[in-house]
Image 1: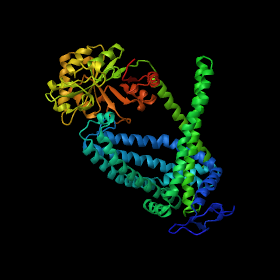
Image 2: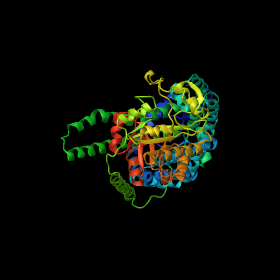
Image 3: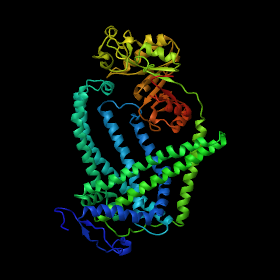
Image 4: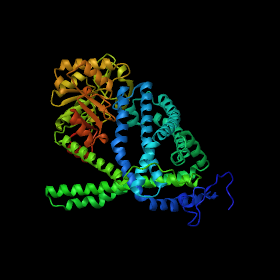
Length: 611
């Protein structure tokens, strides 16, 4: 075969049993032959190397996987979560509301990069242990215990490697993010974001036409950088190289082979990602219907559910283990076939009685998990004190944020009515969501620049249905007087630039004049505004609406209710809310099945059409 011009030779898939042995079988000084056949690389890695390594190292890797799961659960995951939460709390910008301005955006970006570095570091720790296991032989317990000590010994260099890789990706991301921000400011900056999402003006397509090629180029460069440094971890672990030297080594091994490597890595990644989905689908279609055959007896049903969930969890855990193992073995096989070391790694000192060491760690992990599960169940104390909040009134029955929508919500039996308020040009608090009237009334004027008298001329109902052509923008005072304690008023503050304090003062004044302070809850996406409301009105009921929340990122004294997107709410979130003494609300929930789930959890929810 004639070698392809410019191709870098790499270790070939040797054709006999002796040649296919690993270095521990052939000796440390063996020099592998090289070829340039890409098809043989793919076939050799997939059909020989990975299959051989799975057969040889599966049981030691299972022991390592269990041991690392215990380590990650007890140490790595809590340390990562609470460190990131503490940082957010320190900069007083919890990932629970909005990051405003350039400084806030940069802080958010820096935090996300740090979170990525922590996450990548944990992934690299797991991969390092599996690489050490795959390079060793012997008792699986001793191998797993030795790999844990070897991983810990290399923790500092791996952390440095993770920071270097994430920092490089961050610098690259800043470039295309800056271009996207400039395009957005120029083409869509004059529009309200909600209008852009719902109305999809022509400017949106111009923005996408300009930004999508930039994004595609950026993602291509990210992928190139990822595949270029794919083998840095085995270079550090198996060849004991320094972090920067490991990156250089990986670059040398992968030069000119990014496409072939991508085919392998992406193919395995898609397979691994599909496996849990297939398991879930299989259980939903085949196993879940079997639960209906159980006799209607509480103990039998509970026992059946426990058995079902245990079997499902064990299956998913097994699939995740298999996926993690395939990924680690793929990286090792690529590293060796592209010219990486085949020598046996120097074994780190193993602890005495490694079997007891491994299973002792697992016993501690299971005991901790049992205690945590027990505390969670006791702390949840499931009840059905669920409240229903009509989002912008009954906004699928009548135009949003109108008196007609409020009446429909009351007629439907809603416990609370959520609506948005802004400040007009003449300082009146009005009930309106968007920053301008473009989406609702086809008028591009901004709310903050329009006096109340001019707003009264706008028809804000015909866009929904001509029958509501008489609906006009209401003031906060009018809305409170109309609701008249028939439901709790959940008032979300929507400040414009530089008028947050004025809006808060005006809202508090209207509430005081209404005499309904005990039937009003003030809400905002801004933690700073919620904190200011607590300082100005200590007795007010306050809600923080959140896009996401990590434990410890917001002070408990700032709010009485936490509103989360419904996908962020689970049993742990409900238990945490009850333990810390605040209400929890899921928004926006319109699916009956999801409503039933949150009712079972004990969380309030906010639909567009209460019923």
